[in-house]
Image 1 (cartoon, rainbow, N blue to C red):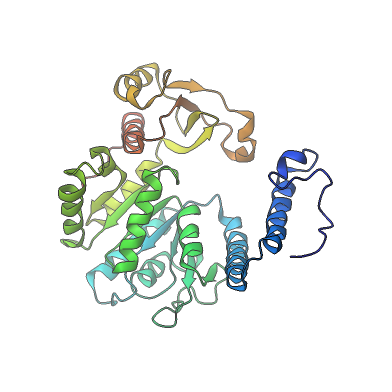
Image 2: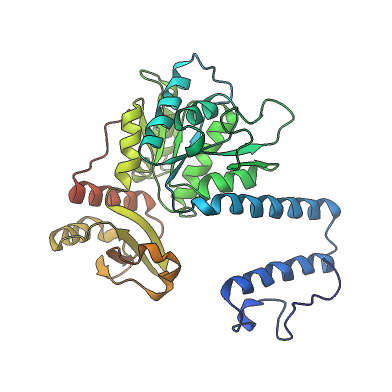
Length: 352
C-alpha cells in the first residue's frame, strides 16, 4: 500500500495509532493499525517475497476467521494423526470411533481434512459436525470425501496459519499416531500450553487398544527431559496418554465439567466456573496451591467490566488470584482438583 491513506488521522503516530484515536471504536482502531502497518512496508522497502508472504498470510487468516466465526461458541476438538493410516488399521477405527463419540456429545471435530486419521475422525463425526483445515501440498494431501466442498473447509498454503487455527479455535486436542507432522503438532501444542501462549485445554495422546506408540515418547520425556530437569514433574499433567476412546472422551468432557474458561484481567488470572466453590474448597486450594500465587490468596471475584465481550459468560461464578504465569502444570492440577471435588469428576486412568 502506497500513497496517502485517506483514513489516516492527523494525530496518528508512527508508534501507536490506537493510543491517539480514542474516538474510534476498538475494532475500527485495530483495523486502522493494520492499515498503518501495511503503509510502513513501503517505507521499509520490503522485498516482493516478504510482501507476498504477508499478503497471503493475511488473506488466509481473514478467510479462516470468517469461516470459523459462526461456530466460535461451539465446543470443538482438533484431531491430529497420520494421513497414511489405512481404513483397515486399528488406529483408523479408533479415530473414527472417537470422532463419532465427540459428535454425539455435541462437539465439532476439526482435522487437517486429508486422508488417514483425519478422514477417520470426520467419518465418525459426520459432515455436519466436521470442519477442515486443508494444507496445499504438491503431494499426498487432498480434502477427503467427508469434508470436500463443504463451506466449513478452509484450504491454506502455510503451515503456520493452519497451526494457528488448529490451536486458536478449539477447546481440546487429541492426537493419534503419526509421523513427523503429527509429532510436530504434539510438541508445538504442548509448548504453547506450557508457556501460557494458549489457555489450558485437554491434550490427549490416543492410541489404538493395546497400542504402544506413545510409550516410547513418554519414556523419552521422563528419562531425558524430566530426569535432566529440563521440564518439571507437573508438566506431565498437561497431557494424558490412553488407548481407550471412552477415556479420551471423558478426559475432554471432564475438563469442562466445572471449569469453563480462563482470562487474565491485568495481573489477575480469573477462572470461570459452572459451580461456585465452597469455603472449604477455597481453603484447600489455598493450602495446596499457594505457591503459584505471587501474592494474596485464591478468592471469589466478581465479573469485571472488561469481560463484556464474553457476554454469554457473565453469569458464571469466578475465582481469581495473582498467578506467577510459570506454573502452568500446577494450574492444570488445580483445575483437575476443582473438577474432581465439585462434580465428582476425576481424571480417567491412562497409560501415563
